Image 1: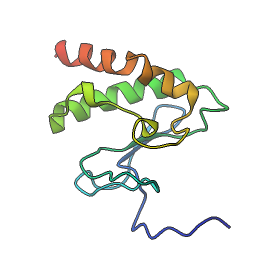
Image 2 (image 1 turned 180 degrees about the vertical axis):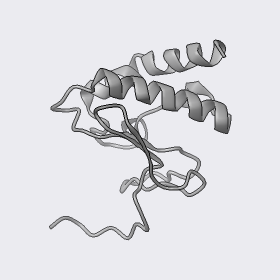
Image 3 (image 1 turned 180 degrees about the horizontal axis):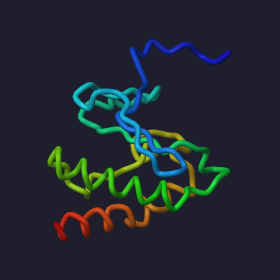
Image 4 (image 1 turned 30 degrees about the vertical axis):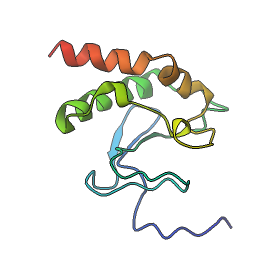
Length: 119
């Protein structure tokens, strides 16, 4: 059995499954949890379900991540330039190489900026 966590509920604010379904997790005004050394206060945590070191992110999942990120940027006045991955803050493989490439190369940020400018 793994290490016990003292989390009051799910650690993420939003979760996205392989079919692109979005699930609300923790209240966005409650700090998320990361089980790492950085403080997640002020971060909106979105997770895509899967192991993207071994799996490919689905097209539906990637599009849902872009759409959800766009929604959150607009609703909570978040700059798309702040879209980052867990590994940008701490030593971890999260979110996995296949998903991280879309963050690292600016694809998600670019798509969110395009959607925001077209509204």
